[in-house]
Length: 569
Ligand code: ATP
Ligand code: MG
Image (cartoon, rainbow, N blue to C red; front, top):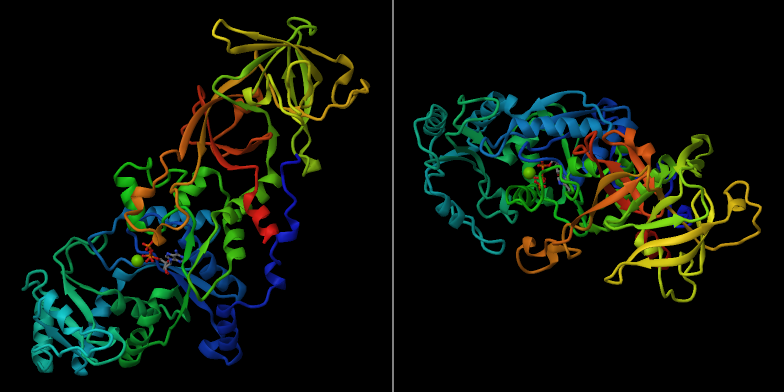
């Protein structure tokens, strides 16, 4: 198909030929100096408070990819220190998504498994005079913080004795105080230029049920007092996280030093942001809860579940992650690159089938074709893959074509069908439009055409040259289907650069449901099967599909705007 661009010139080099990225450089330096006994151990640490999105996919590919490359291991660790937002439904979906991407973890851990150990760590810091129980309210603590240019003020509870702090902390654990009555804070430096050093909170009281530990705990550690310690407990060598944690790194290192535990190393990389969508679980949850989409796996969502349902493959997502590489500066990636990756793969792997995607297709009657005769014409499954073979598709006297493939008053260089004009029906014959039949309202309801018997594809002796080839489906054999056409979720490229709520940019036309008439070979298709609808795009069978009614999702169109823009640039 001519619509499929040849994109070989914009392919990024294969990983083996590429220079090392900055994380690989760090790992190789560590290996060269014999650090960690030559071990590479990473972890992927999702908080189970939502479904994973394509940004997480990048992090997964990075963590598992790094371990694969250096003969190391990767843990899956649920960062479940916040009892309120977490749920086992999310735990299960996260595991399914990581596996679907093609990765298997070494260990499945939960930060909540470390609650006892973390509690011990906290007591150790109290013993060392490096932590205290503070009765200040949240507002008072915020006011004590100061600003980046002004030092903070010390809390009036800062000089409590070790004994008093130990006693109060134990009573916090025992449930003697209500939520918010007290916190445990690290005693560092209220004048530190790094705000995270101004006596950060380590533990807060929350009388909440936890999805794993139940009601055992009513105090929960803060992220900063759980993450690095969990890394250390698991002897993670390289702890990869996104850039916003760069300012937390000194604190990450401080806790590890003071606790004298395994020195995991935190390395930050840029978050993935994609055009025309949002990438935060909180916002994605809003879209789901407020009914802007049909669920976490709605094919318009940037979630892994949504992208999977849309028809993307694990390989295309890994390829995407590989091509964007990793950066030290936040950036916005064109969603066209993701589409390019899936198009590249589907071009090589899918059968070309005929689907007339049109609510009101045009009936073409071939007046010189015998009534009742059915011809089996042979269609090449995939010209990109000679081993894919051919299949037969029934052809008969009446076929449907798309209304767009006919024009009564065509402009110059219109190569599809028009009155008196000729076109080839893909894999079959050249036809000539003899008569346009209209109803009383003037709407075209039928084209009466003749076919050229000598022009059959593969054995054409007609000597006639036509410029256009169009797809068709035999009316008597057509299978009706529902086709879901997806467009961008948002109308703006970068919602974070716009004023106002991201929901005001929701594209009202992000889903269009249309009828289609597809060739009968598709009747046997199963959920997840992928096809190229000739001249239209790549489609897959949606799980809503039944034996009675096929439902297709458009994964991506054939046109590759991203590749064109790259060539221009
Ligand atoms: P969100 O803001 O979407 O909820 P998060 O960072 O809170 O994301 P976590 O579950 O805490 O989500 O993240 C698990 C891992 O995935 C972390 O290491 C995090 O840095 C990484 N990650 C999350 N979002 C992205 C992204 N957009 N690009 C790359 N990595 C990401
Ligand atoms: Mg988070």
